[in-house]
Length: 203
Picture 1 (cartoon, rainbow, N blue to C red):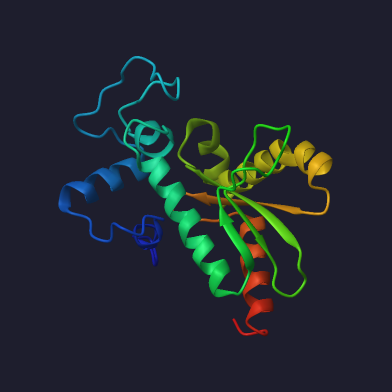
Picture 2: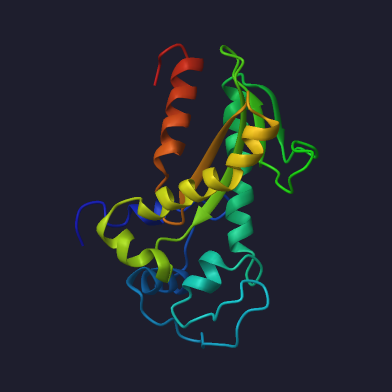
């Protein structure tokens, strides 16, 4: 194994789980290598994600929104941590899952917050994506952060019309995290600029 090859274990965005037992380590390594996980079988299409859960565990553990609860847990923990950071950086009116943000669109950002110096209002939506999914795997193996970039682009396009029509003065930010810890470019830029500005230039 090369230098830093185990960093992904440390960077998985699951704040409440810090220790991996031997079986969990085996499952994580086999999943990373694309190997079958003992005990998992290909099943009928999932009633939630409408895909088959293969033997490598990628769909079941990293993408299906209900079968294990891990996808939702990762998403909610990232939202909670991001809201905590924004509050610590003195952002104003930080609100998670605002009840009414768009009047005529069935969309709701995960967080809305106002910059303490520029008073720019941000609508922030978080997405967690696995680079091991079949539709991302080939490009992700060649380009670091490819899955996060595609996820950011999708979120921006998804919210574009609603933001332009109902919230033209607000700025939309897509926070995209890959399941092994890599963040998207927009995510990194927003966090870096917000932290630097609000801390007076200190990193």
